[in-house]
Amino acid sequence: MALLRPVQVRSRAQLGLRRRQQQGAVAIEFAVLFMVFFAVLYAIIAYSIPLLLSLTFNHLSAEATRQAVKVDPAIGAAAYAQTISKVVQDTVENSWLPDSWRGKDRCDPPADTGLSWTSLDSPYAFLAAEKLGTVERTQLHVCLQREYSKSTAIIPILTVFGVDIPSLPKDAQGETFLRGRSTIRL
Image (cartoon, rainbow, N blue to C red; front, side, top):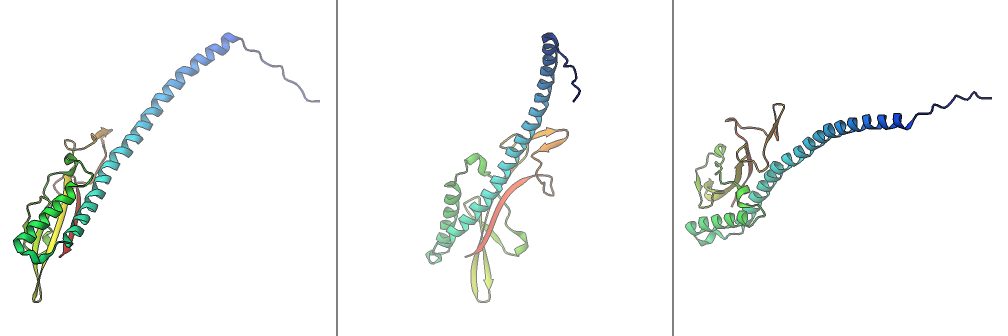
């Protein structure tokens, strides 16, 4: 036969006191966990906006070069450059990006090509003439970029314990640029 232990009977006053003590602990735990949850949620949103912009800039630059390939070069050099500039500008302006997200910073053309790049009317496009044997070809470089700093961030950059959220890579001058580039031979 098993030994039975006497059951301890607690009064209602003892149970109520214990619950009130626990409610304070639950409130503190909730406050701490809410701060952790909020920091993680904010980090997810704060990192996804710059990544979305970078991917969109890459997509738009590639799409603008695809549209520029459709332009007929037989229309003459001046009209050709002007038409390409308009096609690039229209492609970027007809995208889903708001004007304020697009960035008005002009990219530099690629320096390592050895070509002499000419800026077009569009702030996003450059043309260069290239001689391949006896044939002269044109190269188009489309670049979208936007500075992403504390003053230009879409979602404010928070500094928590000395760490910026989001902490994005900086260039040699200590600035962060979101950039999308595409170069094509026309």
